[in-house]
Amino acid sequence: MWSAGWKRRAASCVAEGKKWIDKQATDDASQRKTDPQMLRDGAWNYERKYDIRSVGADRYVSILRSDYVDAHAAHPSTDVDTILWDPTAKKRISIR
Image (cartoon, rainbow, N blue to C red; front, side, top):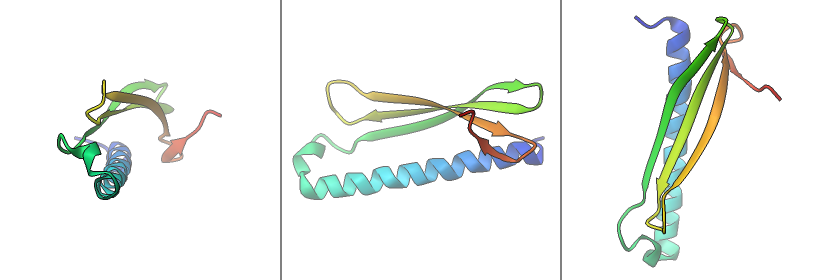
């Protein structure tokens, strides 16, 4: 059973993922209008994944976020970022 903290982290990632995919869809629609040839081979493919990487002394949770975009170019694009979650503060934090 998931604790409230894990549910909160999952909900945060889901909300972020939905916002990201909505932006991609808007960008695609705009691109389709301005340059239909860019999407002549069909819609582009987008994927976003979240993986828990580590839990440090029950103080921090490291989540790896991976974005994959196949825009029918020479090769697909991948972007990887890390999200650091503070369970005590119940929010994402930055180490900067």
